[in-house]
Length: 142
Figure (cartoon, rainbow, N blue to C red):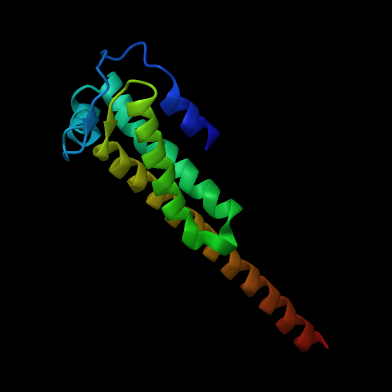
């Protein structure tokens, strides 16, 4: 989570300078850049688009691991973090704050959330099967 905050708060020396816009129209921010992943993968726009998703995959996954018993709060916390970062980018850092970035971030958070919940479920199922297998073996031999 610290890496996400740091990555979004650092000034972008490679980026085009902006006057600090607030983009609330869908497609006016990061969502419109998805074609760059295929047309120009090493471009800054492609890297930022992928980073918006991948950093939040890590955040969503880590938050589920840390708060598994309270995992219902993970996605709202990811949404709050993303919105606060976009507000900070707009108000404090003089960069673009975009609704598209919040949506991309939440897409990544949902992927991380689902991956962690799935891995916990698989691990729990394997543990349960292992314990049941030991019980059956002890009943058969005893």
